[in-house]
Structure formats: C-alpha cells, structure tokens
Amino acid sequence: MRQVVCMITDRLRLGEAADAALVRRVALAARAGIHLVQIRERDMPDGALARLVAAAVAATHRTRTRILVNDRLDVAIAAGETPSSRLARFPKMTEAAACPSRR
Image 1 (cartoon, helix red, strand yellow):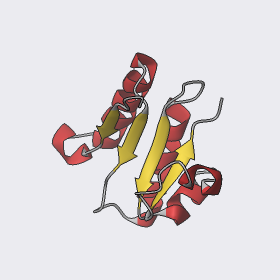
Image 2 (image 1 turned 120 degrees about the vertical axis):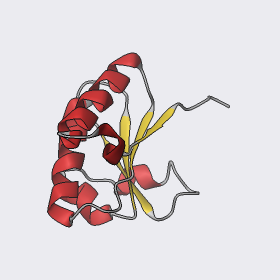
Image 3 (image 1 turned 135 degrees about the vertical axis):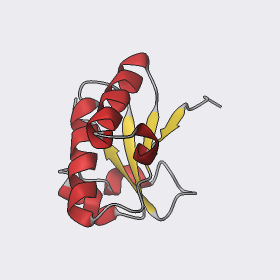
Image 4 (image 1 turned 90 degrees about the vertical axis):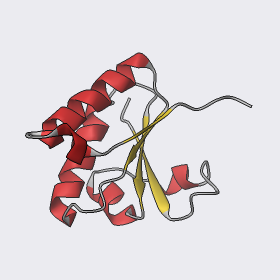
C-alpha cells in the first residue's frame, strides 16, 4: 500500500493575513510533493471558505496534490471542481469532497 502524506490546515495559527499565508504554504507543500491538503476551517463563512478553497486549488495547479474539503461538497463545487468522481477514492470519508487540482 502506498503511503499518503497529508497537510491539514489551521489558518488561525498563522496570525495576520492568515488566508494568504495558508495558500502560500499549500503551494509550497504541493511543489514539495504532498499528496493531499485537507482544508479544515470550520469557523469560516461560506463565501470566505469557497474563496480559500478556490485559491488552494489554484495554488496546486499542475501538481498531483489534491484538495479535500470536509463536509462541504457545495464549497468544492463552488470552487469550480466536479468532486463526485473523486469521492470513490476516499470511501471512509463519506462526508468529504475532494477537489482535484487542474493540470
């Protein structure tokens, strides 16, 4: 079985301009070869979360990194992705939506 390296976000630990700092870290992690970024920002309003997810997807452009959004299929779709084809890859995460980066 192949190992998967996952980054779990927590923008509140990043201080001021946390959203931008988080997207920069996602981009760096993607370039380093991380497999999965789990966006776990439960306190964010819908619109802000959708913008963050869209920025994270853009930051992983042309990488193999996938973005995972817990419990928010609507946000994944709003970020411009079609996650249904990716859900089967995560059978134990039935309340999650996976956003493939655009290659």
